[in-house]
Length: 501
Image 1: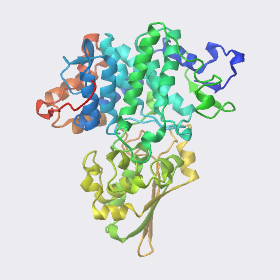
Image 2 (image 1 turned 45 degrees about the vertical axis):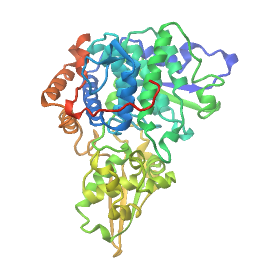
Image 3 (image 1 turned 135 degrees about the horizontal axis):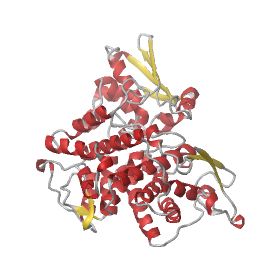
Image 4 (image 1 turned 90 degrees about the horizontal axis):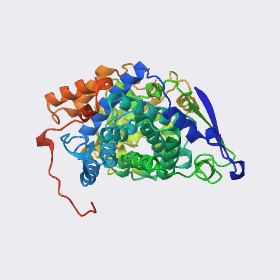
């Protein structure tokens, strides 16, 4: 690995391409690096994971809307739409839009947290869609996905967006563009321009994850993927991009992030060094914001130890800066304590999540979010006894550069009405690579089977799992096999409302 120093340069310095971050990203995207065996296996795991959550969200409104929009753009030799018969094909950018929304809707796929947040699995829908339309094979797809993960993970390590209230899809646009460059074997110059265009067009604010959180939270990564596909298409036609997009005098760093005086250090592999960043990422056992995963596991444990929850006086969760200020009481969002809040908002309230997990001793991607569940009197009473607090110890653990020491948990202090205290802490979720029950292929397959049960046939389940685990050997015509078709009875008739498409 090498550390790239990124800072603003005045226009008169005429910064050379080879010294720009976008060029260095393009270099590794166009290199001939060998494929790491473990990384290949993890790509397969993540395609299974994406399919699980995409199919489970098939009939949810944002997913339906995105799919209807995509179906208005049919293409004979296009890409597949998750859940539909593989004979149904649409323009790849619209497949990226529909499938990206389906993957993101339940907030239930993989994550990487460092200086910023990310869901690297968001790279897969766009890269897969283009692979299907352009006749790529399984190895091409693997290379594209590994590059997408590599770029996004390392941008997340080096550049913090959220402190400037910029949404994390600003790292996703460049990573998808880079992944597409690897997939299509584009030259360094074309990828360089594509990365810059994709970043320029995918900068948006974090208001999409603040206050009353709307369905845009699910659409945002799909939008970034779609814009990245379009950026690559333009650059393949010889068009250019605002440059240098990171280091320029009026660039992203200069006026969107920390300004001309700031230096960022972004790690990247050397040219032709195997791309293994995907191995540093982790998926979710529970459908909720990643920073709540370990605390759900802790709540489930406490459920067995506290016999009467009515005897609780107060619960304090000591945790990292990110957890406290994003999904905790430090966010100062009254909506996070509102029983009538949207599912998207509840998903970003550790107070609600912890209360439900503590009461039920479990967490469910549907049942734990229903309006009836959120408004249960006992839940609301317990919910309002919970507060978070930043503890520097947990913030330091959160930012540890060693993946084996990085932690996303916290300490829970339960004060009872009789004056006694129960205190427990957890470093990482049970399903984390360093947790009690790390996810392996068996767990990914089980998650797929649980989430798709009664939505797809057993025959379709077996077919897909056999196909995806043979990813390295898939020919172009076989990539349609990575789509999963749902049972006819699950296809609700949707009336098209007033729209443009």
